Length: 131
Length: 81
Image (cartoon, rainbow over all chains, first blue to last red; front, side, top):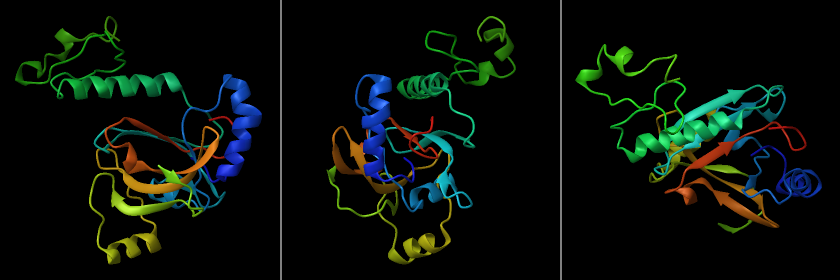
């Protein structure tokens, strides 16, 4: 989503993105011309009239699980976004019985919250081994 | 997803999956443009015109309930993301 019109989105897809990816953009390219949506998400910059690089992970219940907002000059890291989605999906699939510590990727050590874990994380998880 | 009605993007005034709030609250939110997106809370719902695989359409966030959604803002077309 950006303040560009859906018509400009089409030209960007046709003239550049489709050539970069070898196919059309597979998701909706939404237009927020007046910045109305960007404002309620806290990413519309009134001074420059554009939207910051805001990224929101929204779960199947419509709950925002994560957000990241960068100023325009620096781009994002898609791998990290995918890692976070995989971690939230894992937590959701286990009904939060299992949680994902720092640096978790699929297959890595999970933690099971509970009284036995208190003050024992150091036994279960090592920043050198499990990160 | 309906055909584009030609209108601007606008918040519906409700959170995703929640019933709309009374009109007066919506009006107030519109005037002060309060940031209502909060991690751990329901996402503010909105509709927006969109380009999608060869056609113009209208996208509504709450239509994606039941799926994981990645909502990305960026400064402008023809820049990196």
